[in-house]
Image 1 (tube, rainbow, N blue to C red):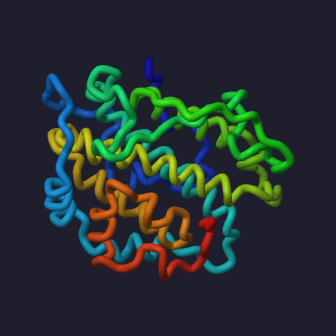
Image 2 (image 1 turned 120 degrees about the vertical axis):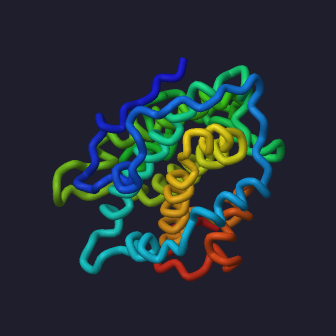
Image 3 (image 1 turned 45 degrees about the vertical axis):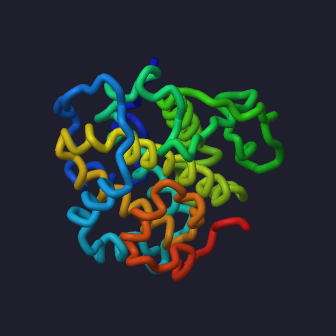
Amino acid sequence: MLTFRNSQTIKTRGFKTLTSDIGLPSTPETAPKTEQQPSTTHRDIKNYAEATLGSGSSLAQAVKLPIGEDLDEWLAVHVVSFYNQINMLYGTITEFCSAQTCPRMIATQEYEYLWQPSVSSRTSNMGSASGSSSPRKLAPVSCTAPEYVENLMSWVQDNLDDERIFPNKTGVPFPTNFQTLVRTMMKRLFRVYAHIYCHHFDEIAGLSLQAHLNTSFKHFVLFCKEFRLISTKDYGPLKELVLIMFDGNDLDADGDTDLTDS
């Protein structure tokens, strides 16, 4: 059973989360149930997005690293914020995302996301905080969408709770592999957006949350673009939507800080 995590219980590192910024309700309304979850077409998403995305100039400015701010700290507070926001958005449609309606973690029929388990569920797949060793990885497995999201949120939460990785005290350094871990977190968190857009957009629209979803996703993409956390190919099923946000411009260009690997 999916255990929905209360975003209020995790640390915020002094950063105001996007949840309060865009006004998501803490208790969602109820959307009409459907017997079988249909896939939303790219055209439907494109039409909704063009109507609700807006210019986003304030968001584009908000993601830039302030002068004098530590890059790792800036990345950390945003990872926490996006984790909270995605957790909240997915929480609004959990009753529609079940093993029956979503037996695989997919985004359209072209993309399936497999979960990469490790021997220790409470150890980061990126290794220890010092980067000295890695847990033994098991073969990637196909799982239901709610199982995938639960595994992902638990994995992210475990990393957030590990003070060797996300130190609470000022002046304590982040681990040497921190930016690599952030890149992996953001790439995996994107997959929840992709699943929601492609398979639960009707429910989101029924709850009148499409503008909130689009604002959250645009903020996420702007941040990833600014620091080059996700490459264009990783946007896969939502690449067309992302290109709309930037008028078809190259997503891998113009960022001030390149954290992507080759």
